[in-house]
Amino acid sequence: MSRMARHRARELALQGVYQWLLSGNSMTTVQRHLEAETEEFDKVDRELFVSLLHGTLDNVDTLRAAFAPLLSRPTSELSPIEHAILLLGAHELRHSLDTPYRVVINEAIELAKAYGGTDGHRFVNGVLDKLAANLRPEEVEAARASRKG
Figure (tube, rainbow, N blue to C red):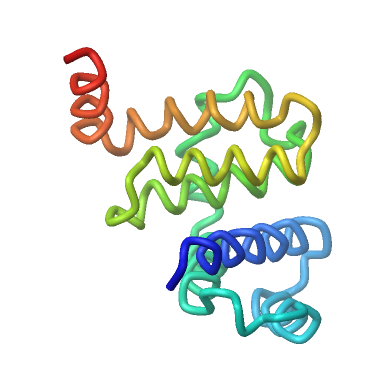
């Protein structure tokens, strides 16, 4: 799948997590709604979309527990869009080990710039950068060492 198809899958998964946070609808209801209402759904990496949506919503409590200690405020005070982006990013960092951590963070930053508040992308970057160091210490350390080298 193309990079654009993967990006669109992340956008759609973000919409799904956001919708779930606000509506409390079931994951199946959210997924069906997005698939039915999304123009050009055939241009989305469907496998990635389903994996991200289900993986994130099936593990919300675990994912929140991973990033909550890195926040300067309770998760209940996060904007719903930042909350959804952090959940998605945490899921990808934890479970999509074939995707480099910088790609996960950069995609989250792009989503925050497109959908979040003015400085939301900086906040998302800071939290996910710390989370990546916790979840993928070897990969992060190798990347930092190569930048120094």
